[in-house]
Amino acid sequence: MAGKVFRSSVQLTREQGRAILDGVFAQARRAGTEPLTAVVLDGGGHVVAAEREDGCAPLRFPVAQGKAFAALGIGVASGVVGARNAERPAFLASVSTASGGHFIPVAGGVLVLDADERVIGAVGVSGASSAEDESAAIAGIESAGLVHGLEPL
Image (tube, rainbow, N blue to C red; front, side):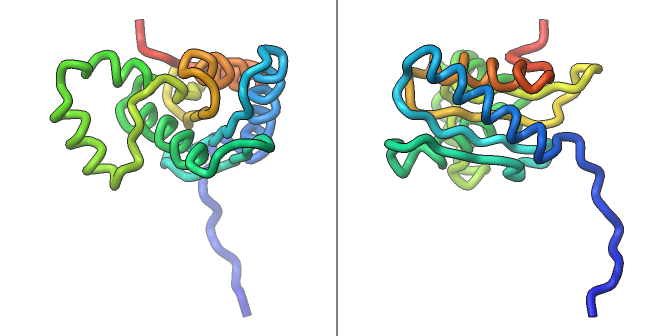
């Protein structure tokens, strides 16, 4: 017989994750992009919600997850990680290895912040251009009433 257990603290809920996905796909349809896949991670890097639109290729999920994980793992948006380290391919390769290959430093991974600008999760989007992926991630976060983060000022 299963007994009671202590519950974990949840800072990014399933309901918020679903709202983010809805916002991502609404933005994508307004912009007329190619079909997208979006992944929402909590602060520990675990999938809260994920979905793909019809027509997405199978690798879109791990790419979206890798973009979100790159942002979460370094503390700035995935595109910022790539831009800051463009001249440091050995560093990027090392971090990719350290993450078990789950690190994609290309725009499309955006942090989700709390009211004090602390990271509570990340969103990764894949399927369109990197700029369109990032715009859709930002729109999804904002449509859920949350704050996005690319890099601190």
